[in-house]
Image (cartoon, rainbow, N blue to C red; front, side, top):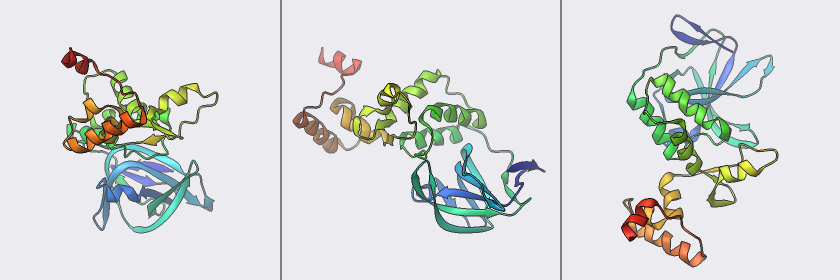
Length: 234
């Protein structure tokens, strides 16, 4: 579908690239007229004779797409409807540069993407850690922590769609035929406030966090107790 030539990634056939519209509202994509600067977790499809399957363009860092013909539309991936900007490319036209900028800023941006719960919700849960490692490879950065740290962060961000106080991983691990797409992603701030009043009060809006704690008490929800909380209480 794509090939490299003269430092550019080019289209082998007529292709369409789909950029989720939420990327623009969340400032993860900016339309600059002749180019679109966007995070590279996008969708792509070959349109040669007939429409091919929609595939993930797995480049989890910021890229700059050439914009020749762009319009609004929508796609369906794994049963989920996604409003998108459709960028079209004729055969042999260049999509973006083969060589991507590296550096800690690029890796940190991905971290913010994760913590905001803004990764596309059509990514397979079991592949999320691999995508994070792919970002570190592309940006040439190491945070010098083991993979289990990334996995713990992801496990906290991704919740059971029917019970946001329960990790999706708990449900996923109990399924005979696991569905890696049936999860709910959340903002770490909101997740922490719902789970633990003590952890929530480190955020800027203490009134909202205390309110969340009161709701947990009224609803009879048991909050996890952190080691730090035990030390302070002692």
